[in-house]
Length: 368
Image (cartoon, rainbow, N blue to C red; front, side):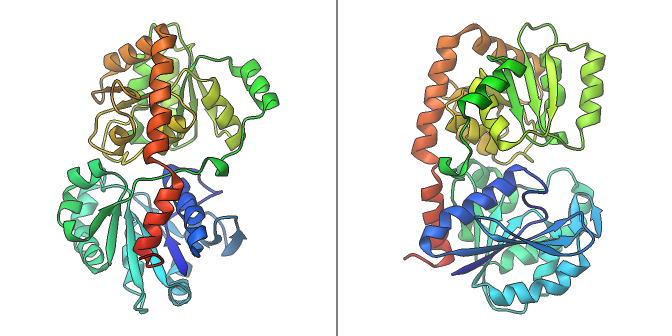
């Protein structure tokens, strides 16, 4: 079976959570006979293709971007060719341009939507976009939510309950690099250990403003790994707050990320709005057996992080509560280890790529 994935960006150009989810879906459905192709946009002058282990990737030039929605005329002109190749088209929502692309797909192929997030920030544009969005979601065969929490709390998904199923995101440990002893030694010499770690894109909804405020007056260290549109603003705020205990690492490769996960005391995802629909970095931390700190925003972050079992869940946008959670884990190695073991156990029970691949294969029609 041939499956076409459509999303606005992909690896290696960007390394966000949705990109990793697409990679894991492609890898985990391969044992079921699925051949995957990814169509995405990139900042380049012409289309090119990459052959990656999980899929063949077609990168089309990004012509213009409106409210984070990439648009490509060349991709639009080529979409029917890709649709003809595929048996199933897997859209990754939200990407409003893909809803528009769907108007030009004449092929009567099975259409699946992986629903990663509601549209939160662009409310004015949402009013204009809603008719197209509703038409698109009405027309697809199946919508996949990534957690029970998001399926319950999304007003959009509540209108399409008859076609919504939940398939939790799963990770295959074998697809991640191992942190060798030399890499660990090098990372420890440079960064130390026992620090708190954030990994991800530096976007408005990540709650990093509040995390920086939580770091005022504490005697432990925070490492922020990642890049994004909020980077300069956050660095300026850290300077203004006089934070000597907070360090911006920029982009880190997978090998260094693995080492940092292992060396950290805990991993933090302080996202404070529903744009953070799942939190793949939390899942990766659970895979490494690390305690988790996150906020209660009624999304998949709380599906991963169960308060007092896998870590600590605090109210959103409250720096003092974040500070208390971090201080608690800093002061008690025993409690940190207990939560880390709980996180690893929950990962093994609920978030295996093998189970995700089987569920997607069933929805695609590969399995009965």
